[in-house]
Length: 366
Image (cartoon, rainbow, N blue to C red; front, side, top):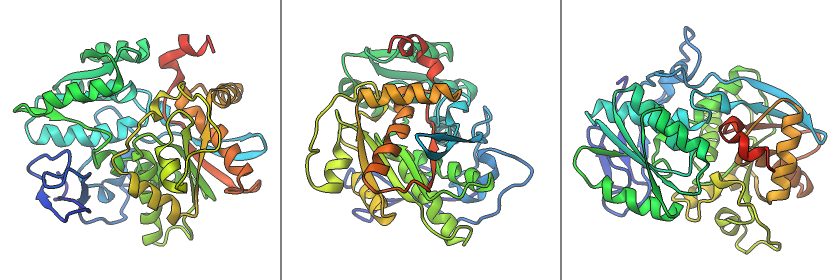
């Protein structure tokens, strides 16, 4: 490992050292953060996550070539969108960034078995990285998860344990998490999945992006918080002049961030079940998410299945095939424009989080 970090609980002040793993605060059960020294010294010899080792808590292993995704410009509905093609990561989603850090850390502590609960993308990511690092994986998934994602987990050598629901999968994995020698990835809680997405911002900056706004789908919120922290750190080093407006996208079927941000229920209702990746009813870092949006003068917008289908089609027409959760950023940008959160002349940075090729049979029926 390149450096030392400490586990820190922002809520109660508990601290722990990196030679023991904690997936949440052992004192108050809150999400943890990592404290470590940082320095802006990109490694000019490599491209991808390892380029930013000096800004991360541990050395990224670059086991599968994670990071270094393209940045492409498209105009959709008159808005200038800079799409970061995160679905071109090794297992087809941005989750590979967080998984590479989390499993490199697990391997350094001697773990040989990892477990995780997920609706899809994280499962494939964890199974692939576990296999590459010579570890075994068990992935707890709801029966309704796309078959393509289950197949990917199995292809990478992971064991799929099906549960009646997403909630039940979370309950089942906790029984495993307490066993000796088992590493619970806990991606919705893990600070590694907040630290890693900072590198999306660092790459976009070095690729010449100067966004007025950044938009992201929000489930557990790790991606949004990583983007926010990435821009905060660029500001600290005076590499950018201002924090872009942060737009959080949720679906009408699941609105915890919207309710917390605005202090009220949405005025309309709708079904957004196509975007399974943002169906997280209780984001562990909800207060932190709301604070980040407010600090950036941002907003929260809601989309439904009709919005998502339209956005999938608009992206496909420009050659970009993504899963429904990823497509929410297109509809979300339009909603943010209507709400006055972004302007017609703004440049909007939008990570496209997951590949549509994993569920192409389902997409073809929409």
